[in-house]
Image (cartoon, rainbow, N blue to C red; front, side):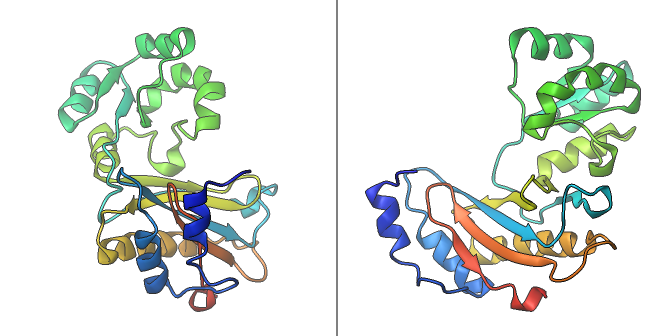
Length: 230
């Protein structure tokens, strides 16, 4: 992949082979986020597990204390009074089959999070091939299939993020914006790290945190030291 001149200049500001302490890495990542828009800061965490095994899966969701800096558009699958409950809690869209049809027939995807009441999973289940690859499929483990629709909507709007392993055993999660203070980013990052620590599978052997990298939307990855996490 060919990199831009600006990207290469930013990468030169990193010490080759250095693993930065978290505080220093956060400051450097912010410094390298020089785009004209407010870049998203994302963490990439490689774990010492094997996602091919069911007993080594790492998945969950947390509300970041300082949010993500993004206005999350929430779609709720529900019926009856639950629709009003969802809209009152701040959902952008709430309904049933009509939204499933728009997604299937029109390719409509103007939402960032999907929540469903348990009785709607028959409808939502048919959208698995569309929502699943995008990480949008509602799941009881992440609190997005729940009878408490209002709480789920409020959490999504407050900055709830899901974390899960990809095929290479790496978790990718947005932890804020470049405009956030170092303290706000640090709080979000520590909250995420603590949640992943607690989610460590009993079957995981050896070093759990293999590597942690912080990067802005247009910046190079800043590799962080995992010494304190081992």
